[in-house]
Length: 430
Image: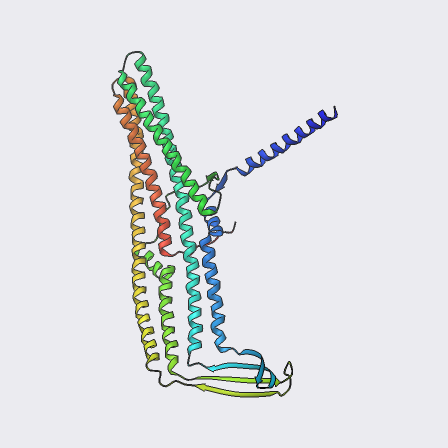
């Protein structure tokens, strides 16, 4: 009896634990509702590419301290233990030296190194921004792809529903002998085709959700509910204004100009090889035959100047190399800015083209809906054909998908334009 009660208690505990685990799984599987801003914020906070560029920026920031070290004093401590043996004689020698040195003049090399390091930090800053803009565009495109496939899925479901209703009407008329068997068969084939399209639409939607999850850092199988809709919000700026903005804000354009500045600083650094260097040193030391060598203290203070008036043309060659690097940087900057202008122009024109399609496809949807209704009525009245209804239904589905595609193209090309212009990313902390 006791064993029976104990068995019941263990069963109750197991069932309770199972229910708790089930509830946990259900809670974990709850859909995640996201706006476009939510998706962008999550992508910015989780994407590895941004973290890598942040690490590069930190390295560039520390390089400024490295360059500044050329102007700062350096303290060096040296100790040596020596054992001497000559014939039957052996001896030991312990020595400690402490020296303090500072470069007083380096011909401008240290100043150039510091300036170059500061410019490279600006390059790193723009690289971080560039990475953020790329991630924002990826998240935006994936979010709009979900909206597109979601609407296309709805259209495919409507097509299946419409053809099912039509098939029932055809079967009813065939049952009373008013239409031929071919009408039933053709309608069944069209329904099967629409069902195939629905399956593909569902798969495209699932893939779109997985792609967004991958960008924003969620498990790939997370069920996402997008809260926004495809909208048509006009873009106000002209093409000329957009290009001008890009040339002064796009990270790639800024980096190209910074590269010219870095190359010019390298020329200054190379020219420093023609100038003398001056340094100051202060030394003190101890040397003795007993460890740690604390007796026999000596000290000295001095200035040292070094100049190499002739180095077989090595410095001149380095200067010419640096000059060539400046020319290359200038040409690369021009090429980069041409590419920036082309990117802006392409995105702007693609956006404008899609915007024009929005109005025409919207009218086409209205006309197709009216045509489909008329075809249904005519067929029911016996004055229209089954082919008229099927063709009208196909035309309606095509018109709706064309409208969805136009809205998607407008929004994604607008996002590409914003990226091509280099509009800064405003982060929203979640």
